Structure formats: C-alpha cells, structure tokens
Length: 216
Image (cartoon, rainbow, N blue to C red; front, side, top):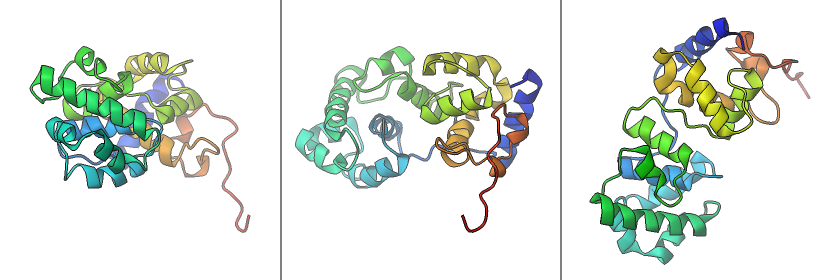
C-alpha cells in the first residue's frame, strides 16, 4: 500500500465506524482480561455465551478462586481448549490476588507474566482498558495487513511493528478495532468480499473479488 493511501484508508474506516469497540462483553478490567484470555482460538460470540453465565457468578479474581477449577470448567466447557484455559485463568487469578491486590496490572511486563496472557492479550487490555495506543495483532489483523499491503510481515510481531510505524497517530488508538472488524466481516479469510469493501481503492490485493452472480 502506498504511503499516501494509508491516511484515506483509515479515514474511510473511521467514517463508517467512528467509535469502534471490542465485541467481547465485559463490565470491568478483570472481566476484559478473562474474556480475552478465553478468546484464543475461539470466537467472541462463543466466549460471550459462556461469560454471560460465568461473570454474574464469578466476576473477580477471588470469586473465580472461590468457584474452583471444576466449576470454572463447567462454565466455559463450550469454549475450545477450555481445560487449559481454565487452569491458566485460575493461576492468573491466584497471582492477581497474591501479588496485585486483586487488580489487573497496568504494565506489559506484568500482564505478560500472567499464565495464558501473551503479547496480543496484553495489547488488548492496555488499549481497551487503559487507553494505550497498542496494536493487538490477531489472525484477522495479520491477514488484512498482509493482503492489503498495509503492513506486510512474516509473523504477528513484524506486522505489529509495521502497523505502529505506518498508522497515522490520529488513528492509532482505534486502528486495531477497525482492522479486526474489517477482517471479520469484509476481508474474510476464504473469499474477501471486495465488492462490498469501502477501502478497496487503497488495497493492493489483486484480483479484486467480483460480486457473486444472482442465483449462484
């Protein structure tokens, strides 16, 4: 993607969705952390379905610990890799209670020290909860960044660094939300819906996917 196309690319996404938000449901910083931890290799809709039952019962680190591993697994068993995620969440809650007074820490280093919390999860919490201009590169952002030519990279870290370099500062706070939603609903993995894409004029992907024929 040409440098001169980056600003209008994001201006167009912003015009269509001025205040983008995560599709994960939460009412506190801890619930956000827990939801993102549970969302690895799972859909936001699937996580929300489970946490709508879990969070009203156990929405704090201490409440999760009081619930116990077996009951926690019961609440999240519809989510992929739920046994591993339950163990990680329990241990994370134990660390939050023992070392952080039950509060979610505000630094990347402390967040990434929590079981099940990698760079992407830390970036989401830093951005959504604490307002930092981070770039949480998931599969959607990785695909969109490479496919459009916005920020090509061989791995998520390369893409993250390139995005931080190329995204204009005015758009950086919300950029990862726009890119995730664009990848989730328009620039989808199997067949990008170029005929519906508002930013197709700035995208390097060729050939653009034509609209499906009626009746096919």
